[in-house]
Image 1 (spheres, rainbow, N blue to C red):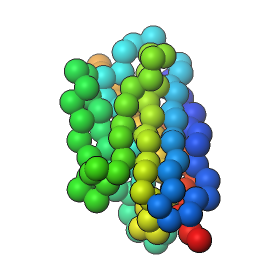
Image 2 (image 1 turned 180 degrees about the horizontal axis):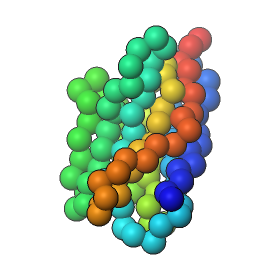
Image 3 (image 1 turned 60 degrees about the vertical axis):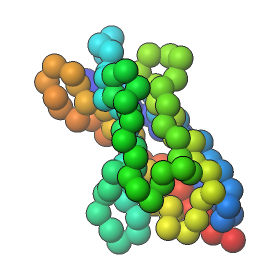
Length: 117
């Protein structure tokens, strides 16, 4: 059973930065699809960024040029560097990974990011 632990959320002023971290445990398999989703207040969960094997990356349009997803040096870790944050980035951010054999998606517990002055 894969477990995900996220960290790095918090309160930040508009224009500020945060870095989210996520570490997967419970498997020795290389996870080739890692990513982040978010759920803004009162809205459904939406894609933020995904990173695939070979470092192919997808970003949702609203974060392009401001957010950077990357793999960590430790296997099955992923980061989300968030710069130039604005109020529309306020959300619970969820880490997600996909098992490469079962194609089952696993989710973290979520970390709150609040952008406010």
